Image 1 (tube, rainbow, N blue to C red):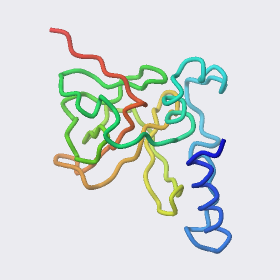
Image 2 (cartoon, rainbow, N blue to C red; image 1 turned 90 degrees about the vertical axis):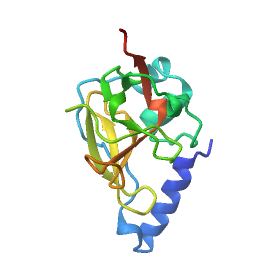
Image 3 (cartoon, rainbow, N blue to C red; image 1 turned 90 degrees about the horizontal axis):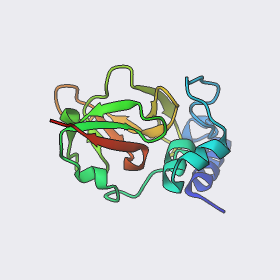
Image 4 (cartoon, rainbow, N blue to C red; image 1 turned 60 degrees about the horizontal axis):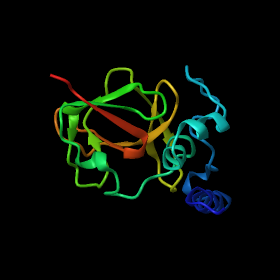
Length: 164
């Protein structure tokens, strides 16, 4: 099956062959990195929904405005859908208008970042620091106090409301 990832790879590979797009061939941004939680592709597929697998393990992007978490406004915690590590507190969530759940700061030590060139432009990719799952990207157009916008795929997250 031809996926968006294949098209992006073909496009960025073609740009690299032409000497454009930074000359970087598309490879997983986390290649060679070690995370505490490991599973085979088959195990991940058994643990996750197809959409979660595509986002967390294949670095896909869900359609904007498609996640119910985009409209989640209760107090609570957002965690990694792959390993349940707490990632964001609801107090850091805001409506960026982007169509994806957005936060101005993760929990300390919860995420790792790397640079990707998958669309021909350098972006900062955000991963779960525990399982390496792809969460989304971080941009420098967010609100105070950090000025950052952690633009996350809702499929990569779970939400647990705060109990009284």
